[in-house]
Image (cartoon, rainbow, N blue to C red; front, side):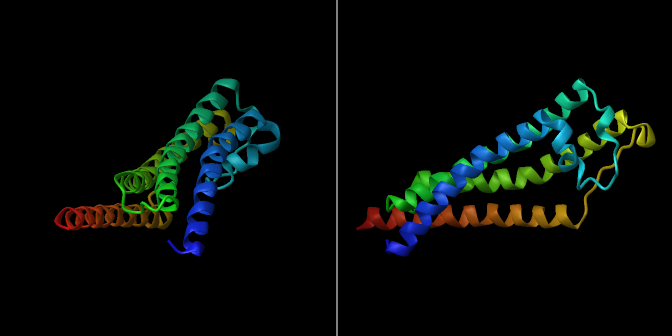
Amino acid sequence: MPVARYRLAEFLALITLLAAIALPLSAAAIWLFWTKLAPFAAGNLGYAFDLTHLGVGARLAGFALALLGAVVQAYGLLGLRQTFQEAVAGRSLSARAVNGFRRFAWVTLAMVFIGIVQRTGWIVIFSLSDPTHQGTLDIRLGSEELQALFMGLLLVFVAHVFAEGKQAKDENAAFL
């Protein structure tokens, strides 16, 4: 493997590890330091919620939703990290590399639907604590979600092509 590609794979393995650690920690930080970080929790929901009345139970429910997505994303990133680690070791088409990328692709696709559930759940949780938006329910499937869906499907397709490349490599190795 050329040195530049080796270094890139090594760098990306490190970045994916740091991201896999940072996702659950940042989700926890927002909900643990609620008074300072609350605006970040509701910033892109499309409503101006008064989050000062959010009780402990609602915070725990919001934290559980945030942690669900963060842990699932971290799981996918750790699969992608396996792919980079295998590339560093000179085994770009190993079963571990292919399976790691496949896991990342399927998690990316699953996160589209988890994201919709998270957003809807947070709107319900926040609205139940806000007298001005009492009981709001908003389920959105817009251009951002459709773009994420397309990217997830694209990654799943690439994972299948990656697996076929590994299979062809294995067949060639067995033939020779």
